Length: 394
Image 1 (tube, helix red, strand yellow):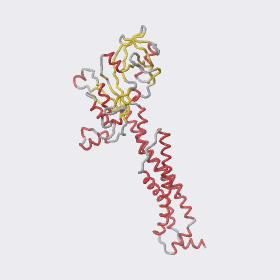
Image 2: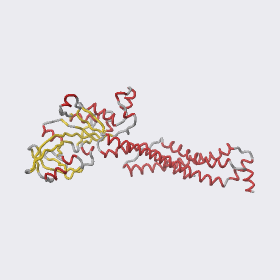
Image 3: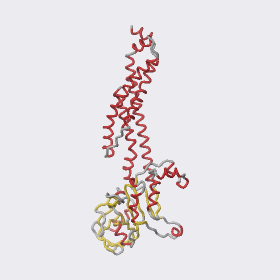
Image 4: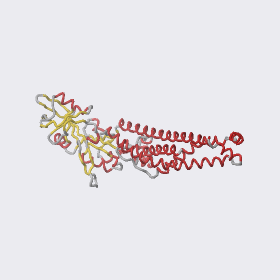
């Protein structure tokens, strides 16, 4: 019975520990999906009707690490997209050139440490054969390179300026048709120093619920404070919009909703497994206690015959279950510490946080298992008829 309680408690406590950390850990793993927020210039009125082009300021990018949820910003990358003419030998083509940071260390405001930014933090699946571009080189999308017959190491002209092809990019998307440069080089080429077309942000977020979809304009002051101080993708987007001058930040919904659904289903799965482990342990204990009870029917009959009522007999079994629960709970908690470390290292590559609060949780779980496991045996003990039992014993 102690083993049953210990194993049930160990599994339940381990799963509860996992449930407390799973959203944060899995959210970080899901950041491999790429950016979940895009920031674009805000164009309204006649400017929008006339199709006038607006730009964001490159100097505002680091301000993303000054918002309330700055620690949730895991990646950020600017993009400057413009039209240009590429020439290679006797072939020419109008293409889209994209200036960006492939990897860049940014100084954090008010701190001595730096923050890693660039495409590698928002689109980690980009596959570049070769090296990233520098001041005198570019990276071509694989489809564009095949169309023009360009190979790595050859020289091309962009708007008449020569650049060496340092790498070939393959993403399976529109990037395969584009030309990529270092952001500074693209800004200089097009005369747009300090300007960017859009910024992609990869942020650690809280799964969306019904409250998260509520329009902030219709919220009371208390509701707005709650929404603003919760790590929803919408509230983080709002805060980013506040630090980027003339911007409009919006979630990339297919990414945000997919992450939310995955995290919600994982949480439900963990809760179901916890309940199943407690129930299985209780059934195991109930079976063992029932077998033990069969060997003690004479004792129960004798106690009833000399005046023991149902309450006193119940107290005997419940006291035994309580002791078994306490011992099993302590053993189960000790086992769960090792199990949690194993799960953290094998699944997430990091140790899950140990919480002292889980010791009372383990004991409560153990006592719950003991109580449920002893319920049916006690009811059976109370139905014992002394005369029949003692007669058979004689």
